[in-house]
Image (cartoon, rainbow, N blue to C red; front, side, top):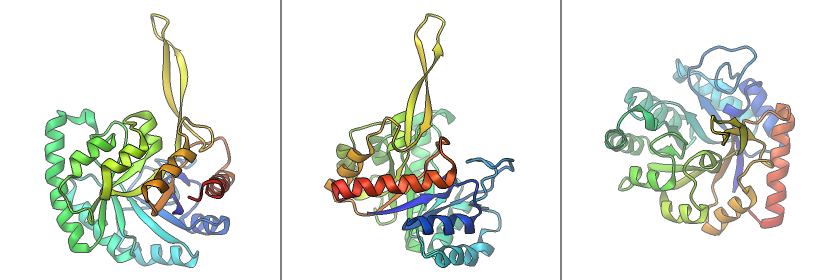
Length: 283
């Protein structure tokens, strides 16, 4: 099992700064965020993120992406793409970039569940994935479907229905325990077994549910809040242990959106925490 950081969670650093800092801390790899984004000051996770490579002009930046990664001595765990499954032009570009960079895998975004009738969205996305599977095979890479709250693939069960029948060498699933705390949680061991060969990649972060006042009848309202790896509701030690027992030995990419610690302290502490789990459990 190897540990990387998804640069959606490192907004304060430029790509070169992120690569150097993570390598110095001892991380094995990096997962580059690739998308066009709005400007923001100060930089944020989703807008103005300085560790993001723009999708516009991506092909002209591939040599730079490769050099920044290699110069730091890091591997790429995947590419964190934001192209929707229905956006065939940009999915094709990301698949080609993944092949050129040797990154192996790239995320493709699924529709949100509120965007229309679920069955219609699901059927349309199955058609998109059939096309994506063919193009991924052409490029000899893998397209990834992430388990993500409020999408049509919020759980392992839903994702399996979505990808079932496609070649698992070219279409896989990202299991993300943090997202599942918000929606879609299933026992991890059972979910891993259910996904089988489609379990291709892992993201970890943590989330806590916090009281958020009271409704008109006095019932407690709740909201989800990004938490540190140590503080959220997901038992990450049990989760990683279940991954090992399942036989998973691939990448685990951290995307910590908490802000209790400054960025450099946060990434360093996350690696310390993961290494401590490894020492206790052998992950």
